[in-house]
Image 1 (cartoon, each protein chain N blue to C red):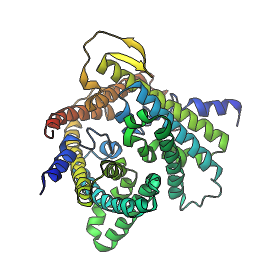
Image 2 (image 1 turned 120 degrees about the vertical axis):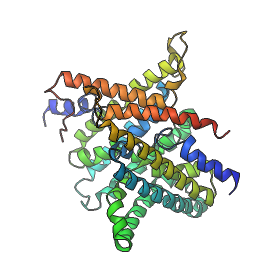
Image 3 (image 1 turned 60 degrees about the horizontal axis):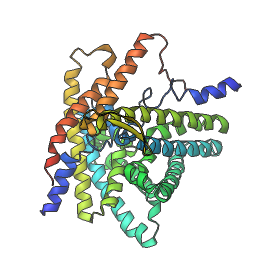
Image 4 (image 1 turned 30 degrees about the vertical axis):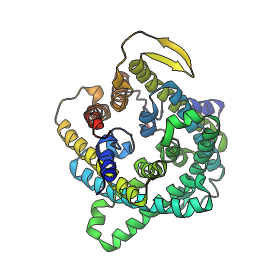
Length: 211
Length: 193
């Protein structure tokens, strides 16, 4: 594989095959924890770590994995990494861990991670899988940041990242955006916007499955 | 029936509806909600599996993990238990009730990766529910899931016939419909405390 090819593996996750907006995967955590930028960073980092770890291990054992029982094997690998992340977060970032709650253990059933293991890591070598995992993870984090940025700004009137105020407005915030309906509304509008952009570019569709 | 049990049932169906306020199980919610009939089948399968999974994971946690002091393994144990359980239910139904199997069959494997089922197991542990409470919570959460799924499928059947702006066709409009439903469900939040 050429150098350019490797970079493509990393970059494709950011826009062309963005897991949230293009392949519509991993919705549950995306909508549930996207109430503030802090949560988005925490969730994104946790998911990226799991994605990277499981992609590496699954790609390393891909030739020794019997095809028939590959799914239970993948699940055990992913669940192990999720347990590692969950224990690390309990120890080092208790506040964040509390805010994310059961959505950290629920990374196990996040379709992004399982999807990448099945569709990519089980068929490609380690370096490509690392790039793929990293790209998908960053793409996931960016989408989370976008949604939670919009929700936090509209719902609280200001943007904060780890205690530092980025933007502060005296506007009267609309509570609805931090509550559950806000997540669905913002997601629906963003999907509509991306669909509109895609329609404008018509034949150069962004979401053709490459695998 | 005691008051706390009622609170659990109402809480799981309306106030903290699994789909509309906790965002658990969104993939099947958007995937299987195009027609009412399959939505109903999926809902029944989810109620059944969630109640059963609550019982089995409760037993696994309190009788195996706690005495051995290996609670930190709960994620791995739960996901494996649920996956095995779904396989067994599938095998059993195939033999015992082929008609029910035919109507639920295709949805059962989908449920393994449904975060609502793992979510219910984790919430049971988090809330420290007793055996009865955990079972009731599992079934009620499944009923709440089915309710949201059925309402959504009814709306989407109508939506097929209406004119939607091109950019919003398909998923985007479904999200906005779900947002409106979720807003309506917010009104239930005063029902408990």
